[in-house]
Image (cartoon, rainbow, N blue to C red; front, side, top):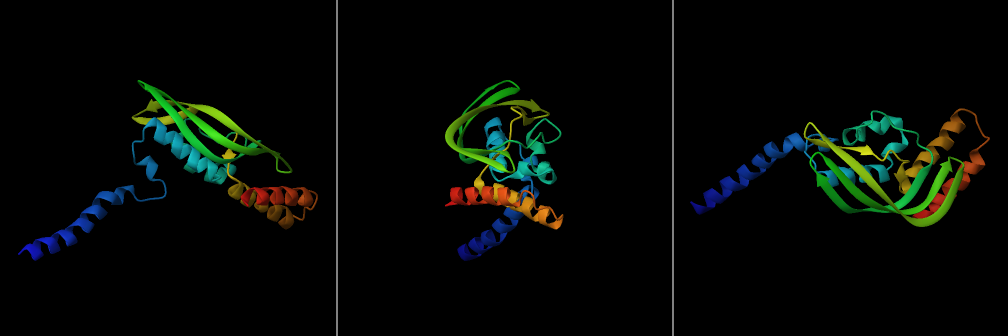
Length: 184
């Protein structure tokens, strides 16, 4: 009898988990969850470091986390190795989250990369709208790790090649080599 109860539990639990977790499964499960202000900022930073803000075609992945409706200019691009959520304070429907970025350098234009290690602190301002926390400030340049930025620049090289443009191939290749050095 005891074996039968255990067997039924083993069959029932996976089914229960599937039904409970199924609504959360998807490409953008953060839209279905009510995240706190610190969680919203951390998710924003994770996506940003992965390069989501480098293309207008991926903006939809950032939109649920922010109030602004379109991606601002993408230059300059700040190259970072990591971020840390330092603090979060909340008062009513407003919150402030402080994040520290480990900066490696900055890409001023696709052809000009400056390497300079430093620490950068940003304060994210959030508002709660309809029960969801959204970032409304700062509206600042993308902060990206070297790997997705390298992929982005390589895409520019390939697009230029398809279009028959060769004038910036050497400078873009130099930027790719600099990014490769950061990846080592």
